[in-house]
Image 1 (cartoon, rainbow, N blue to C red):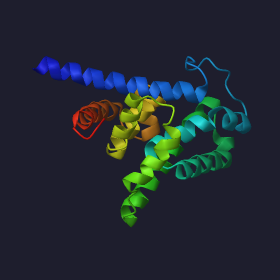
Image 2: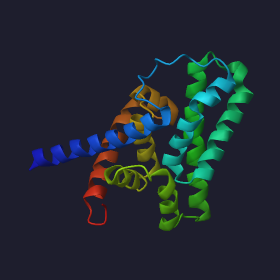
Image 3: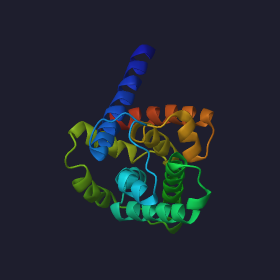
Image 4: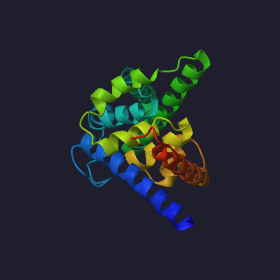
Length: 201
């Protein structure tokens, strides 16, 4: 029985990896190997090369296209203000990822404080556009991700959509590598329960 549970857990991880890997490929235009593209050298290059992936990252965290766009715009504005303090393009991209994660957290905190929860039909309106080209399995995974606590969702999105290492996730999310590991494990367990529930297709 324990073996069956482990197998199902591995299946959940594979589903998440397939779904977010597919979205990453769609947003980059190919299944490119990380680190193989020429490093952007200017703020304009970074914006042109990474904006859409950062918007998708924010969208997977906050569930609203307009809010995701605002979070990413604010991240680039902050980068512009701090441009002279950054070592290179890799440091700039790390700054942007961290700014998007922090901006998304701020949005979620404000929603909770103001009790402005998004009704399910509004989330589905977002899904109608951004998930229209996804298979039923992929749509199911994205819906399940949206039900996770924010920190768990961040870690899985950064890992499987952002394609980041544990160290990079720890830096972007402002947590330790050990916390990344334990949070990912709890998140996958929670996703397994969500996707096994009768209401989850």
